[in-house]
Image (spheres, rainbow, N blue to C red):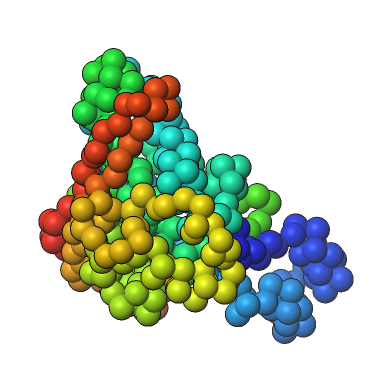
Length: 311
């Protein structure tokens, strides 16, 4: 990954506490101690202001509890299988955008919740492209092109998505921070199968591509001119393989052919309110059969929907 995640170490915090605090105090009279020294030391260690932003893609199987008991036992396997295929598709079809990632990197940064999970990326663009590929894989599963007998047994699956962009840190191989908290809150409040984004994601796309509506005319060269990609990514990869979504010239024949975004409400994050937006994309991609590369199918799938009911 391009940007490292702040890691808080248990032994480091324990050392600070051993120096400036007492683990157990049993006195006859309870006294609340002054804690300025410990507070200052912990602030110096954590350096919260320097913790970087990451994008989180939240994925949730819509109406999981509505499946039968037997079908529910198979859903974790189905999700894992679709998830692994999406990773492979992203690495193969978007080699420039995902050049800083390996299959292991992506799997390591996934927080599973059983019926979905949270995936951590460097930028909102990574989250969005992964979600687009996931929506395409889900479409071929639901249309009986991908493990068709399993699809017949389990039934059609729908995902809901949330994309956030905020601070992330790590402690004992787990990930925490506002980006994860806000993402979980958005998914929890959404009772529809939409793709919702927070205000920070909306601003990131406005700053870097003049707004989400421009996704449908964006080229791979435009992507390469985004600050993070322009400064840290190897442009030579652009010459080796095309991108399945972003072409070399503006076109709406393939890739993101429609992009709509609408503000739908607010959620409270700490003491501040955050605007939430509903994102709807239509994506057209060519998919090849890994077992027989002569078999190809052009698939158009939607990410999210146009339902603008509040949150």
